[in-house]
Image (cartoon, rainbow, N blue to C red; front, top):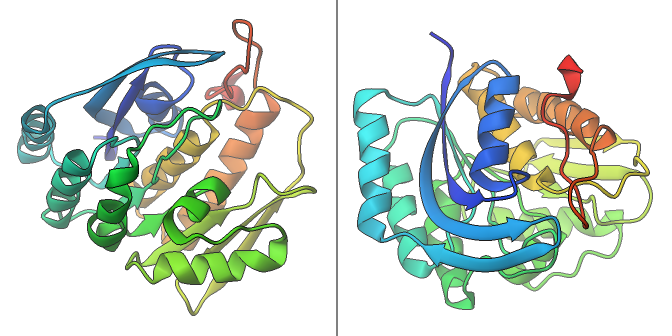
Length: 260
């Protein structure tokens, strides 16, 4: 049986991010992906045209259905949209004996809001304390902490602020900074700086979802957090390099790049 990984996230009808990206990543990395759908979006390469949240009871029922019968070896969360969904998912994670990768999705690649402002406190106080690894990008760091990361030297301060909310590890993604793509992984004691060349490719839709899912896949396979994050960074760097045009806007990363 392959390792089992569960994603709790929204649907991207264009297939580049969200549940669709998560499941593609999990398959590409040799795990069995399962899903709990939190919201449906009308979304394409140009942006998000509509969002419809699922009821909390539907999210709970999906989660219990999978976990109670099939079991999970890692969980990844993405778009949770509302305070009620954030709190429900945090409660479910706290009761599950498996590592959790929390991607605190706030905005889409195109700048569309995917998290209600009223949900930020629940992310800080309920969801992040349940995380094995939290993976905010710089916009999400600013949303959650007020810290504006303008240079690589600011990443430590951002990580300390995120760790203050309770996750065991923080991975601060510095992809929006100029120069090479640098991320900082830390638990407050150990530090791991991950660097990769920046590829001249605008087709990067789904990068954050893909990275978090790849980390969850590595944890499900028994890797340590630093090992899982290092492997995930290598995988997503290859996926970005192979990203392709789709529609009239920003295309997705290529999840099966290593098979091409």
